[in-house]
Image (tube, rainbow, N blue to C red):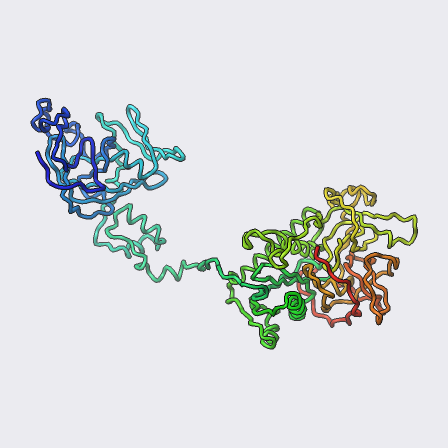
Length: 616
C-alpha cells in the first residue's frame, strides 16, 4: 500500500505507531515486506486495537508509558493545555495497517509532588484507544528517568534521584495512577466564568500564581496580567527595586557623594558624628569626625580646599540626601558653582554609593573593636582605621584595584599595617626624664596618624597617646582581652586590664586631628570648632617627632598628652597643642545618647605649624 505525503520534520513515531511516508511498507506482525499486516498469515484473530489490551480495561485509568513511541498520543483534547490544528498530510498507521488522521498537536502538564513535568508535541488522534506517553521523549524533556519493577514503576529526577511520579502494573500494562494522569490535571469548570472573576475569587493572587492555576486547572481562558483589578496595586504594590546603575565618573572630583552618620551612642575623643566624602570615580573615602552636625559646612570647605589643591581640578557635583546639615551648604554650592544633586525623599537607593561605604566602615570598625575587646568610646579610632584600610583594599568595582591605587597611581604599602588594638612597645626614650627609665613601655596600638608617618600608641599606665615611628609590635597579644587579670603593666600583655583604658573626654582635643584625612601630602590640616585642649608639660626637647616651630610662635609642641583622671573616666588626646592660659572647660557627659545642646564655641588654640604628612 503506497502512501502519498511527506514527513513532518518534528514527527517520527516508531514501534507501534508509524508515519507512512515511504513507498516501502513493512508488516508489523512478521516484519515482512511482501505483505501488509492486515493480510499477514500470522495475524491474530483478536479485534483491531492500538495495542494489546483486554477489552474490559477502562480507558480512563490513565496514560500508558510506551518505550517504543517517539511522541505522546492522546485520543481527546481534554488533557491539552494548548493545541493547534494539524494541517499536514502525515497519518498514523496502526498494527492492522489502518491509517489514522492526526487532528491536533499540543502540550500539557503532568503534575508531580515537587514540580510540573512537560508533555510536548502531543498528537491528538481521535480514533486512538489510549493515552500513550513516550518514555524517551518524556525523559529528554524533563531530565528524569524511569525505573520499572514487576508490579509498579517510578519516575525519578536525574539530579536529585528524588521520586516524582509512580504507577502500577495492571493487566500486563504499566499505567499512571489516575490522580497523576494528564487527563486528570484539568477540572471541569464553567466556561462562562471569566478570568477576572477567577482572579477576584482567588483573592487577587499574583500573576505567576494565576498563570499556574490557569494552566493546571483549565479555567477556560489564558490569564492576562492587564486584566488584574486596580485594587491589587492599592493593597499590595511594594517599592520597585531600582536597577544597578552602570554610570560612573570619568575623572576624580567629577562627582562626590556625602553623608553624615550619628549621633554615636557615646562620645569618642569629643566627637559624636562623622561625615564622609566618596569620590564616584575611584570610590576613595575621606573621613571627618564632627562635634556638631552644623560643622558639616566648615568641614566641606576644608575638604574642598584640600582635594582641589592636591589633584589640580575642581569639584563639579556633590550629591546628598538633603539632610538638615546639607541645606545650609546649598547657598555655598551656588556661590562657588558646584552642582548640588539631591536624592528623592525616602529614596536611599539613590545614595547607594555612600550608604554602602557607611555600612562597610561601621562593620569593619565594630569588628576591630570586638577583636581588640575595646569599648565603644574608641569608635573614632576604629572607624578612622577602617577608612584607612578600606581605601587600600582591592575591590571588584575598580577591576580589583584599590581606590588608593586608582587615585594616586601607585601601590599601597601593606608592610606598614599592623593589627589594631594589639600590644606594642614604642620607643619613648626622648620623653624620659631620667636615664634609668625604661626605653619602651607597653601600649595599645590605636591606628595610624593622618599627619605623620607613624603609629598611635596609648600608654596604659600614664594614659598618654604617643605618635611614634619606632615601635615593637606583638600582634597576637591583645591586652584588653584579659579583663580579669592583674593591672600590673609588665611586658606580658596578659596582665593588662581594660580598666586602665579611659573613656574619651571633650576636654582632650587638638586642632590637627579633627580632620582624619587620607595620607595626602598636605602641609597642614584645617581647623574646626572644638573645646580648648588640656595638655601636659612638654616632653624632652630632643623628641624626634616634634614638629618645627615657626619664627613667630614660641609655645612648645607636645606629641604626648597627659590625660588627667577626673571623677569619671577620661580620654586620651591624640595630638599636640599649646598650653592654654585658662582652665579647661568641663567635659560633656558621656552617657547621653541624644545630640548635645549647642554651647558657645570656645576660642580655638593658636595656629600651630604642622609637619608635612606622609603616605606610607
